[in-house]
Length: 491
Ligand code: BES
Ligand code: ZN
Ligand code: ZN
Image (cartoon, rainbow, N blue to C red; front, side):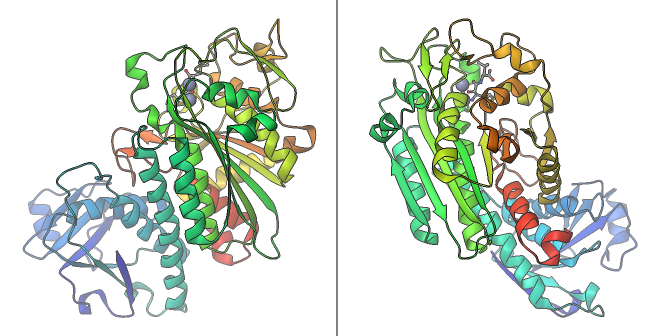
């Protein structure tokens, strides 16, 4: 989609159709020119309610407030409302609360994220004729800011949205088309495109590195595991940040086989790995002043004569032994070894892991919210703030001194499942915490994205299927933490 900023009044811009937001049911704004007709049609302008009037060629969208996420969701809704019309161009004014950059970005993200479709496997593809959206600066014509700032905002929003949409494509791809070797190929393509380093490690390397837990999970699959390491090293980087992603290209549960209903959608168990690829891609394209490492640990959790078993005892890279009591708690095994590897080899200032780790997180927070866990209160708060500003939902799930006891094993150092079924998202994170060295305790954040990564109905600016969860949150955190421009701090 092409976006153009025009320093003209909305009514003086020519376009096939116009999009008008009705904020908080206020029909008295000058852009709401069809007030009488809308009332006649009983249009209430409730949040996300929309209508297209052919007589005036205007689409009206109800928007709860001028809050950036309401604008983002409204833009996604607007796109859906107009996408089937025979219109090539649309015009819209800016709806701004405090900072013009924040809502301009939200508007573009709404259009970009809301127009995503996964139709690769559909014989009949329905492409929207809309090619161009023209944005009028009318509302801010007399205020002192340059359109260059808005152009920059549009560019940044497009970069982030393109990465989110790329992650959605990867996650939505079926498991027999996207297995570890293919994910590695895709990552290499991204690295080539944005000019960052890419190293791909196969199982021989994992053996050399004594990553027995990771290898055990992968063993029964005909698709061999890969650990994918992308790195972006700008000059004068302000910090070194590692993003680790759980990349189960399929999670059947292994010998602790999932029931059929729970197995469907488990192609999405690679969402963390795909997200870290998207994060580094966007970070490089935004020239963020941070050294970033994205490590995507890819494996397939299958059954077979060679499968790892409940009762096995595995030795992780840091020497700790793990009693396996459930082969469906496999993500934490892959991540344990990867976390050890990243701490030892990269010595980061911050270490994030993103994982569709537990169904318990979805039970706790619902489908739309990311679970944020870790030992550092300040860091968790900053991550929650960044999430909120990015348009992603996140909430903290707190550690306490009693829950770690549930992971005790009578035969090994730790057990891969807790002895209680309550608090499963936290006990999974506490398992990972066992593989975080002392000096990294306060540098680590665990994001359980099991809820929002893949939802089989559309919500907000997300389509049904993969959402690209974690990308916007991570980019916003990086910008807030390490970029000095007012806009990124102030948003
Ligand atoms: N990949 C699943 C978690 C999951 C569930 C992701 C639902 C997305 C949606 C994970 O590997 C898993 O199976 N976890 C188990 C852990 C249990 C055996 C302790 C779970 O959540 O049931
Ligand atoms: Zn599992
Ligand atoms: Zn899993």
